[in-house]
Image (tube, rainbow, N blue to C red; front, top):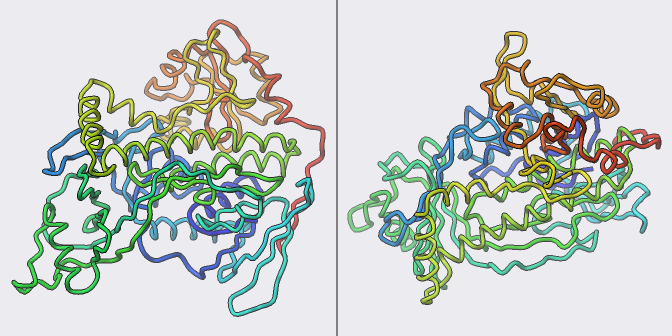
Length: 526
């Protein structure tokens, strides 16, 4: 059962379907929300979209962006954080898009999957389970226009129901405040007027009028402004105020000169309170939190939606392993262990950017901006900050780090995704690896490698047979590894350190993935 059919919920359903797990999605709206919200994803998320089969269609509507610039109040560049058109995951590191278009792609893909059922116009009113979390979870809901309660029992419930999550309340989770709260006005515009723009995102670092600007599409733009108390952009006076705000980028005729907004269509403007929060727990028994139900981040580094889709990717293969192949529930403990520290890291980076760039009118704010500007002029700093948005997962039973043996261990990091040629066809690596575990080796496969791979249903692939551009061999060499064991989410779980001939600690992760318990049969949705 998935509560909420936004991009996180639908992506989770599609990922589960690829593992053969049927799901029922309950959504209070009857159709997708038609107005823009999220507008940026990174290359890791595009790899997730590839895994659910929509990356080709997404590429037709996405626009790669070269990165982020921090500008002062006079629009002089303080620092630039470049993003490559060819990222580690095989896609542009930053892509701009229109969320309703992405949601339509995901919904269309969902409709093609017999494992998935979507019910719109449904409000979930309660989620309950036994105290030990072992029995099926009961979800109570009401259809539009009805006061009658209906019930569905599920082997697991994924709460993808946003910041006001009823699922979060059901598991007794509470917010941890990470100390950022500001009210901003977000304005989405379509215009045929000339716009003075850099193709990436711009953050105006001004204590009195901080702002963000980005080009989303061919004629689509977004501005975000922090408005002072009592300021409004509504009505005729609001149009004049908007004209002044966007003047650095586009010339709108004033009302005195007959300006009525011609050629400049405001698609949506909404007031948002940007918050930084993290749920203290993400799971109770078989009930889980994903996306905004688990974490809220200010938008300054464009990671809000990205974090939710990472949640879905991390959890679904583990849940499928438990439901379909009888793995123990301890495997599900690693979801929060792995995702919560990363979410906290991303939120802290976003908060740091927010406070350094917009944190008030005090002398400290000016000093912070000066320090950031000076630091960003140090060679390699901006590239390191960009790269650090997805650090290695923290050590846990599914991430076997042994620094003494391997130096800079690959464990907990993502395998790169180059183009490869197999049977004369040029394909992306993940399309060859499939949806299960895989062993990539730079040496001829050994009996020990095969012995690890076979119980996991993992393919064993020699990188020399993939005819890539040398990316995989070089990556293994830098990590001082002869081979790696990849999880279904393409994270390195274990390595064969150079010259050792065996994985470092299969005994630690094997009990989580193998069990004699017979998996429960999937229940049909009522």
